Image (cartoon, rainbow, N blue to C red):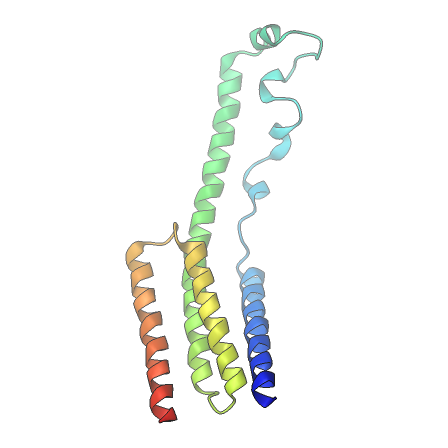
Length: 171
């Protein structure tokens, strides 16, 4: 019975610590919002090229009324705002990777000091590992491959060392 309760508390600790860390990251390092970079008024129900045209004229007549430079400038503006947002998102995800990888390792190191309370220790380890995986997933395309490799080696070294220590201690 106590093993089952320990397992339940370990899972509960993992979930709660993970949620606290993710919510803390979101609170202090908010994700870029598309609407802050791009004005959505250009995405009304009427297509951009119909701007200034009555509904009762043909497409050709409307296109003749709107010159191509107007249409091109609107498309360029949309492309520029999307590119700006996309660059901000990539920067965010690259930094998010560094934050989650660092916090994940810190949580796993803290778990090392709670070995006498196995449910808390196992919950902390699990939340740290899930946080690291989350960071790799979110930052995969935005983070330099060398940086990902270095953090993966650090993560693996700490986790494997921790497991080796626990196995030796168990014997």
